[in-house]
Length: 383
Length: 132
Image 1: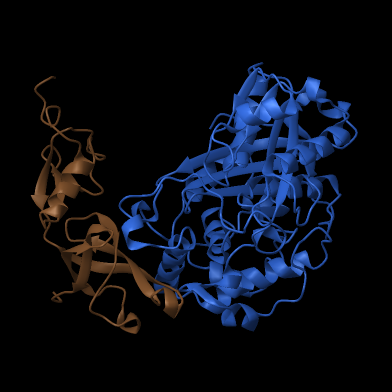
Image 2: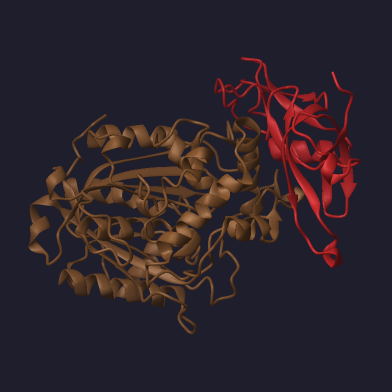
């Protein structure tokens, strides 16, 4: 594994658009709100931005639309679209572009008005001709298959899955930016309306509005900005399928490949990570990703989460903002994983701050457990 | 190699598959180079890169790999199943199982394929099959 990118780029800005419902605001307006906030945080202006990275389900050519809207003329842009994981992937491509001199200031951004625009998943996804005739509910049925196979193979229970949802809610409870903060019990999750067995409504992420923006520069400029820099120590992606029917083993994601490669670049292992942000579109995601990234053995995700390990007070702080299950999930969640990790490493989390956090793992999932992208971030002490 | 099998076909594999379905046949491709079966239809063998993929009548034998019950209001037609089936030939496909109550679906149960002509198109569906 090449370590030539380790610590060579730093996130110097990470900001949300104003959280909460944004009636009357379009997706690109919410994105621009987040961009304005990250510029304020860094002291940069739009004129300084020469690298643009956008994933979107709202724009066919997202970097073209957003560059025009923001008034940018990027030297390098990338709208690699691998679903919600796109933004974690952009960290890697931005680092490559920065290191090779293709750009000097990389802006990664996202905005969505999914909730106020009607609540349906906004998607440009083409119909899958070998799946669509059977009318699976997209995407939840795909995740339901994975959950069922995990239960069948490892004896995982719905109660164990429910612990993922209640842990996320417990973190959200102390985060004023989280959109669902009222107490949630295991029984609430188990008794919620079934959507696609074995997943109930409360096994599924929220549908919200939201936006976020991140600015990355080469490490030699990392200390030129007001906030403490957060360095990219490792990153890697892998994907093995698009449709769930083509997933080789429904209980093993490509995170089992992206994780080890990202760790190898960083020179760290799971035991070195202080705070973890996992793409929890559904409760089963968290179980699969904890296992595939090496935080617990394969098949033991259920007992691991049921032990309270990932909840506030547990040994492994996971999704400390409340995650996609309780904080926000505006169609694609990847940028929010990064922003929460950066805030934790700066010691400036909006909710519960993990004291002394120096390393974070951010893991994006895209499609139907299809794209898996892992990034390892660290503060100055980890270089 | 211009005479390599697969280059001179009139239509692509997707269209050949759907034409078979309209004739009531469920066929899948087998690679003449490495013997692997593939589904959904391919232009290149995903195992060995060969273009030499030949259509074979599928055995129709399969086993239930996973299922989900999609919940739907009675007015819209009620709950229904969507399944993943492991075909005897090797590939896995999405489908539906007819002729069995939702609560009697079981992972591992033997299934047999049928081509169903339905309002929204021809499709391969399964019914409980002979256990082996």
